[in-house]
Image 1 (spheres, rainbow, N blue to C red):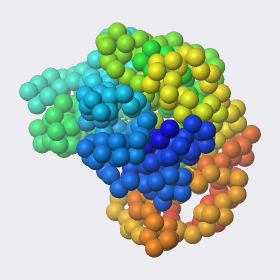
Image 2: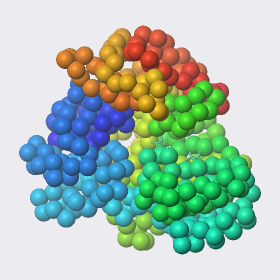
Image 3: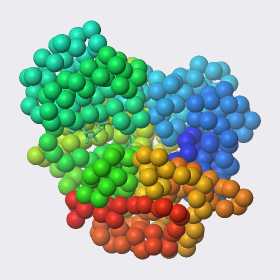
Image 4: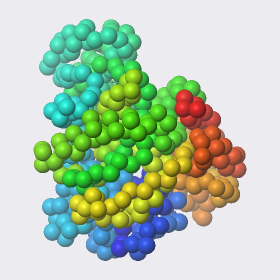
Length: 424
Ligand code: AMP
Ligand code: GLY
């Protein structure tokens, strides 16, 4: 069958790589894609938010399966757009309905959902400009640090963690009254700080059944030792050593089952990935956030470990027969290291020629912010390429990623040399 992947990052290159391996794939399209995806299929110059453009492409290329990478089109209702169109409604879209995407699109929605279905998460209350004073009072009841979250999507920047109560009050006012994060902070969730170590667990659900995909840990800060500004993610490791069977069993029983059952009992149409951001608090899992898509760069370590044909899994999601499929996972460790543009996550230059990536041996090179310019691959974003390797240990896998990175060059290239530092 012909398949369309929506998005343009390392996550989507990894989807394309797995989908291209399936004997069920006939033609593969990526919209808009990057230089890496163009080696595996046909890039279509359509923005992820151009639903009419996507519709025309789906009909023109006889596409029979659509896989949505990023959250924005899901929160904007691409699933519902397909469902409500007679020409499109028989085509499975991997991703939740607009309502289901609120698990990521609204922190308040996700907190209410967790509370209703008994999913362990930090104690919270939400506030608007109308009850700012009550927000101040709630802050007084908490111990520092204080966690303030803009309700809506804020490009990963909407969470503030502050040590000082006066600063927390000032920021709350900035968010609610002065729209620090625009409309996204018209409502703010204030929650208890959870002390522990973070990890992510990924689930693929057809709305009734689910498969638990490998766990992963990503490294969000720009600086080594987890310092400096937040990025989209500088590297990732899968599996997470402390997420052993006992821990994952707790996650399944306390979080995954109530989440999938909760979606079903609320009649929320959800056929796609659930990315559960967790805090391991002294051996007990608490949900920090839901995302309604795969993580990036977590995908670059999770999917290469999945041995089951990805198209078979997606077909089963569409047919709600995921229970009939066995999920096989490579027990080796996968690591990925992200190469980024100098200056990222602040301002950076684009258009730098990338050399040496084709010399990588025994690693997978996933393109993120790259494009073709006169037959040369050049940088086109902050996160440029993710170098994924397998090993029998974190150290062994990382050594391969780093030795291949030594062959790769572009002007002002930057990367973290300490991915996995807290796990080894
Ligand atoms: P989020 O956008 O919800 O993932 O939050 C961004 C980051 O803030 C998370 O990855 C955590 O590191 C941190 N964080 C969010 N909520 C909490 C919490 N309740 N306690 C401690 N850290 C948190
Ligand atoms: N790596 C974090 C994310 O995809 O949200």
